[in-house]
Image (cartoon, rainbow, N blue to C red; front, side):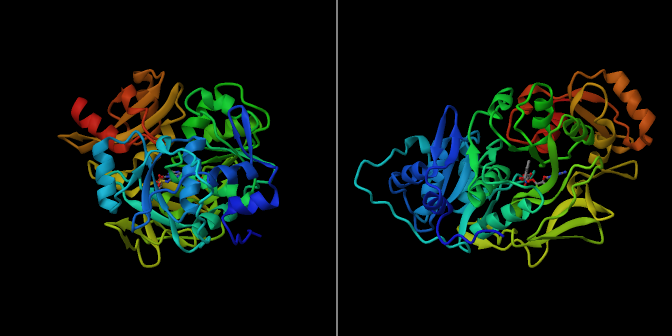
Length: 442
Ligand code: 4YB
């Protein structure tokens, strides 16, 4: 049963097991007692009337301390990707109605006598804001309270065991819901968290001593190319279409994979299953409900659903009742299959084309690392599918392969390599950036 914390979880664990390791940093272990003390020695953070503060977020100990100190002091946080341009940062803050932004590198332990403020742990009070990664418009700030984060964590544990002596690697950005969810699983369980460089090839060595990790499919692909540490038992996958061949390969190498489907508004994972050789993302976890609309759109609700977006300092409800995800799904017995984004669908010569279903058929082609199908304007058909790929791909063999497997309106009319600068963004390649590049450069 989930613990009902009557105080901030780190204070609880600091009392219950002060000497146990809370965190592994590169070359250093931090006990719960030391963590509590480091948080307590943070200075008083600015507390605007709205109580919302934006924080430049990197995956490091200093950022984590500032976040936990903020919460404990009664300050609600919006974590911002440091790669955002100043203009985008300004738009996001203006849109949400937040005046203040903190760079954790400018926050130093206070040398003054302990003046630390600890507000009560109210699990119903809004605590975090996470930006949506929607493809159009200014990213919106999605609110969550601690109750939603803890329900998210507890529900997942009923499927994917995470014990007190396990260690979860912070393998995704804190500013993304997938990274924030790792923090709440760690806090909920009182297990260990590892913070290390996970970029590129560093991921393999970061996994040293780690039992659990959350990965987007491209990270798993990179991992399988090298040697990986033997303690790793459990990988939670999600964020994008999970290629079945990738999961099968990982499972064959002894890595337990859980396939998940999640989103910001639902505080990360909604459905999941232990990999079973079949392309689906399993059933709704406890504290989530899911149904398909008559058009096949995935609708969700439950204790993990956000109570609204923060716009202009005010809470704007998401929906009354079910939240429409814009994802298309289908039941396969009791398991959910994600067919793709409704807003990615286009029409080629009168036929509906769902890019993700083409991606699924063609992603197994020799040499392909990543594959995206996008529409391109065509005088005869309106729009035609084209393929954008990374990896070492023979274009004409690839197109012939597509022709042998797909009906003609689904066969890509061309295949282009994705330019490098579009690949190093956040955790997902932006469909919009790919579409812009296709429209302007091709
Ligand atoms: C999918 C999808 C899937 C999402 N197939 N499309 O803790 C986790 O659950 C986790 C673990 C590893 C990696 C990621 C996660 C996440 O949280 C992912 C949450 C996420 O991606 N949120 S998002 O708001 O940025 O995007 C949500 C959208 O992503 C969905 O609406 C889907 O379109 C897509 N998506 N999982 C296919 N398994």
